Length: 335
Image 1: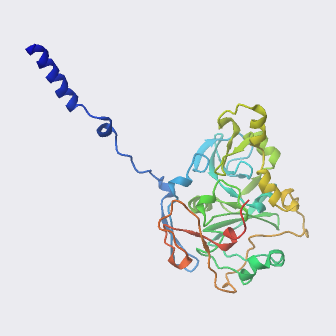
Image 2 (image 1 turned 135 degrees about the horizontal axis):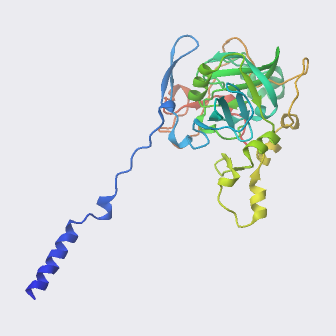
């Protein structure tokens, strides 16, 4: 009996020393933001320092994060390829590879396809709505009739690349954004947006004269395959989504272009690809112009960001941790 009691006491002692599930669990490590998306300080249009906030980890997924990937297109190294339907931009590299960037696509991002050249690059570019925009939506754009100078309230963000066909401006822009939560999604305004960090680095890597290819919906489907939009608004290859029991339902959820709801919200002329020619009227959502003060004080709307803390209610009180989006990006209702 004594021996049995001794073994029982020993077992209890060993159990008491064994780590419980709670003590064995490692503390959760903070999410690491890649160095390329860390905050940085840039030089503004007047030589002033501008703080570029770090991209929140919540906005960095596999499709949005800059990465070197295999490339199956035919473009030569150095070319830029924009796929507005798969919402990615490629900078073609040697040896069958490309640097892939996530992009947001606005309505104007679907009005052009084909080949063009980057004829102009601008750091902290200025912006003015076109006459057509002022006529069609004066309640939204009238306050910007005098233009917006480059800076932290400008919808073009930190950099802009301007596409031309010969001497003809296509009015197609690749640019930064003040709303990093939009990258990877279909947006209501603009052309092709990138994270500010991405467009700043790309800006330094490519010279004027760089060829740009903008894919059509058919080319996107052939090269990228069918895409599915997630509930969060991102697109991913349909083959990566969870299997759906009903094949007919799966087919209905597969998108080959922008979602139908976004298509219905767009003017029909904006949906059809445009073949540009000299003298053809165009609508430029981000017209190039010299810096000019706005016609009236601008009060940008704060980004609705569940990860921002604290929330603020005006541009004057916004901090680098609570970036804001310009009224041009926020005032037009999203899909």
